[in-house]
Length: 412
Image (tube, rainbow, N blue to C red; front, side, top):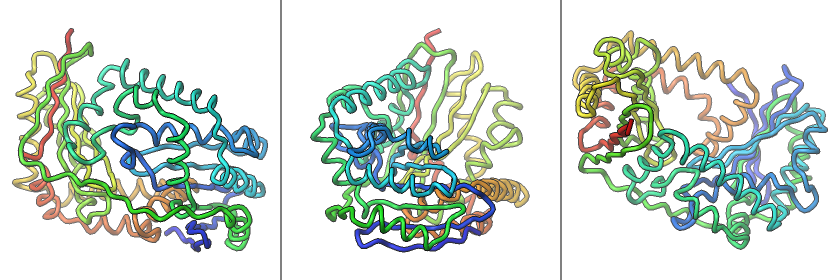
């Protein structure tokens, strides 16, 4: 159980405090409710680029990392389809340093042309290294475009093309900042060896005077229901043939999410999982196979991907995967099989909660989803999933017309 208190500043900043006096450290997590789904289709990759830009310093603090390191702290950030998350970890007796740093870049980020050009170059090199020059690196670009025709999940977080990043201008950076990086679009979580009274005082001191942003409504075009199987064939200089099969699934906040996530575990967690046992160990069609979910705020994807053994055709590989999926959809799973993955999830959640930063990030994420207190219901929701729910979820998700398939052929 994660105990916490919460309050809201007059400018709309939501603040959550989770005291934990078993540690001498404090975690300060700032979540902004903006991700790649909020981008203009003609300027993708901007949310991720801006994450980098935020570390270029503010008007009063030219180098963000320096003061934090001198206070014994460290920091990092990440961007997803739905959020951008920044966090600082430091000794709790230096807590105010993190408030000073985070508030100053929220209030007065330094918009320097040289800094923007530097970060554009960094992100473009990342794009080339991980997505253009990496074997299978463009899979997510291709799968996003195949699976989503209307929704902005159509492009990956890194962006659709290098040109979109290259053409970013300072005017766009300022517009983005003053729309999304405002107190009323953020969640601040402070966890660790802290008192709520102290956090409230620091929040008022450092964030209270920052103006709230203008109110706006997110208007995301929703993806229509898919009605036919989609297939894309790719030929590239990669080591072996691979297949990628993505099925539309529910949103992260939907009640069916928990059954879908457990279904993914049944398929792919460990050597006794359905896919590995049937297709790697027994039939020897794949050298490796895995399943995962995207866990997005709007309807996501359950992906199955595998590397084929020599002389196995794409059609045979796809058919074999479909047979494993159809078996669950038709006959379900045994109670002991479900309980096994439920226990694994429970252990994973419990282990994650031993880390004060994980607790801070989970509180922020669940608050963004709707209610921070839901973080304490996760295990219960997983445990309440029945074998019948698993079968029904598999029947809904693993329909032929709901599949997006990439045959990724090796030229070798």
